[in-house]
Length: 192
Length: 139
Image (tube, rainbow over all chains, first blue to last red; front, side, top):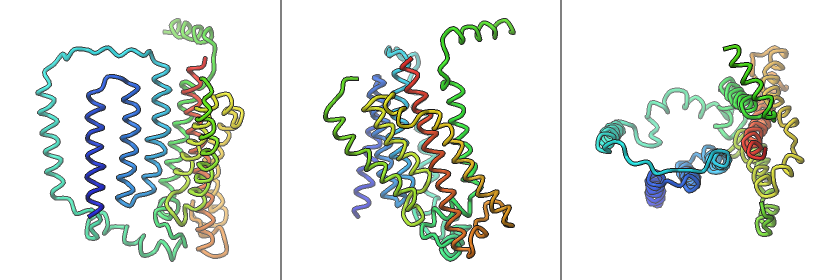
């Protein structure tokens, strides 16, 4: 019972936040609302018994990415002109409405939340639940699956994170003077 | 940025707690929720909070970007290295059972090491990205 109340409250706040984000024009306020949106999602994940995801969402979504977006906002010019609507809003509204209705229609066939007979639970999940503790001795099955059974996946994920860091360093990391950038730019034009 | 007494005091109080929580999530990930990724982002959030309150230069004095680049690579090397060690010990790649005398102990050790690699790498990369973005506005 309390779960339903908490769920409805969090989802209502999520909806309110997203409507507020759409209607706002102040980028700073929008970034703050994004952080609130992430925090609300983290709360939802906790209610759905996924504290691992909630940790990530709270730390990355509400914390780090908000700071990164603020840093980006500080780099860009702070002007947001209100452009007049150049189109009729009815066509997009119809598209969104129909897509949303189709998605809701699709959820009717989905198994209930946590249903033990759902297709996702009957494949390998049962094996993990039965064998993770005797085979790895790790009580947290999520960790056992991530680090041991799916060690290759996680290695790939770490490689992705590492690549992202390298890419950011290559793009905007190096402290180079304006002149060298200019020279490179000119050289690039000459070659072109 | 103007020094703000309340921010300074509160964040000085909070940052050690955040770091301890990150370490707890890192090394208790076998038993409770969490793991390397979560611990890494929580740890980097603590340093980012420090950088926001005390300034970028102060944060870069604690963790120089050179060290961060080494750490980001070190995490991946630890993870992939565990796989190589298991290969050398006669198992499959990333099959931790051969790391210790019993399967359980080997799995435990392997998962701990691998999560450590993930945590180091993620924390370092998050800080690298933050310093890259925030440092650009300073030039």
